[in-house]
Image 1: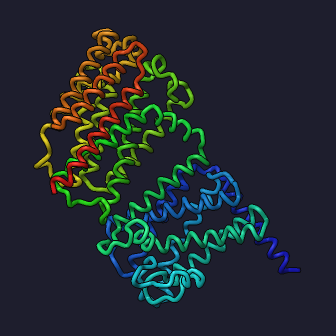
Image 2: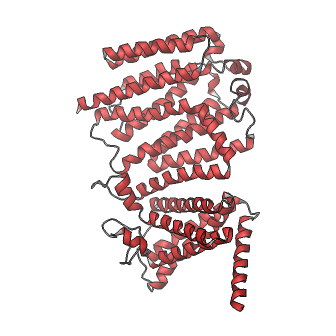
Image 3: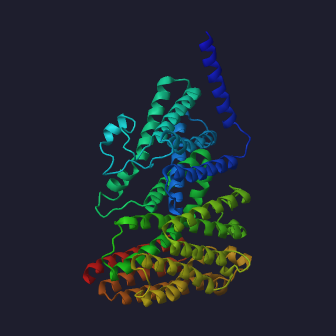
Amino acid sequence: MRKVENKFFIMKFIRRVINDLENSKTPFIYFILNFIFIVALRNLIEPLSTHSTISPMQVIHFSLAYITYAATFILLLYAFTKTEVLKIAKVVLSGFIIIILPPLLDLILSRGKGWPMTYLLPGIHGNLGLRFITFNGNFSGIGITPGLRIEGALTLIGIFIYLYVKNSKIIKSLLGTFSAYVVFFFYTTVPFIIKYLLFFNKPTFSYSDYIFSNFYLLIITLEGIALVYLAKKEYLKLIIADIRSMIWRGLHYILMPILGFILAKYYYPGFSFFVGNNLFYVISLPLSIFFALLFSLSINNMEDLGIDKISNQDRPLAAGKISFAEYKKLLWVFLFISLFYAALINFRVLLTIIAFIGIYFLYSAPPFRLKRVPIFSKFLIALNSLILVNLGYILVAGSTSQFPKIVIVIFLVGFTLTINFIDIKDYEGDKKSGIKTLPVILGLQKSKFVIGLIFFLAYLGTGLILKSWYMILIFLILGALEFYLVARKAYREVPVFQVYLYSLIIVIFYLIHLIPLHT
């Protein structure tokens, strides 16, 4: 009888602890800060146990790994309980206090010697199937240490208890716990996954904290989208609505470094994107640019709120679907993600992305708000495009010594003049706000004719530069089409952007076609 009473008391206590955490009035940021400090403490203690040093890149690697684990377990517990994501997050983030145990337990169990903590490693830890069914198999002095195994066992027990408290079903709780074990094992085998799935078992592949960090960052991005959807579905819908308004500009800027890659490949054909760290250039860089653009255009949307209420009433901020204060909070998230992705590639990329954001800020925001200056404002957009082309080139070539000078002219002259078409749809709002764009200065119809003519001449010039009769013909046709789309009475911006992007893709594929001829 006493055992039953004790069991009842323990379950009642556990339920109360879980309930107190889930319904805590403590600001959620405190749970995040506690998690950050726990991770920092683990990163500090682990080298004491393993008698090793820890580098800044290792700290980033390990920290991103813990964030990934937390996000994964939040999603897993949500799948089995359908409890509010923020409530689950409070429990999971608090539960991460357990990660301090493994290095301390290893020190105790090894009598102060400590053991190297690692993933399961190819060439050292074989027979993954046997290790899966035997809780990581035998310990040979390196790998999943006794402390890590105890941590894993305690975590699985905690997950089972949480699931049972939430649904009172043993089978469902066991299934959820088994799923958690599968997740555990998946993350212990990350080196195998990276080697065989991402790098196709290339013999030249070498493990690095950089590769692990990028791998985890990619997972965090995907999990982050899922968590935002589950926790703040309305935010994700608003972000998607804003993305729709910038999709064509976004594609333009993402294609810029690709153009730079291809130009550099023309001079350095031996470079491969599928060797070592290079693979993550094509993942991290577009994401950094995307979030930088999302931040920059959001700043522009805040400053152009009055204009957008006339010209772009479907945008979330202009439509009143989100408050100004909440919109500003999202900006800093976009900025942090963009700069973090950039910094993880290298310092030059970080500096370029900061410059990209800075140029857009000068363009959009007071006190300069250079978008009010005719022609020069479009020079800034052209400059932003050029620095991304240059960045793509440098990532391949390492320097700008052979960067084609004609590309600089095309962007700083041709692109500066043609990009004025983005002001046509904002004519009424700009006119009312006193912003002197080309359409406001020349009048709508005359400016459409002038911009359309500039488009045609720019396309003709591009065809001539490519020195191919069929490219001249193609770009004559595309230039004429752009003239028609810009100058027609029923103007729409999207088709103009689409034809431009198709043209840019044609140029990229044409240059790719030339690369083998240069080898």
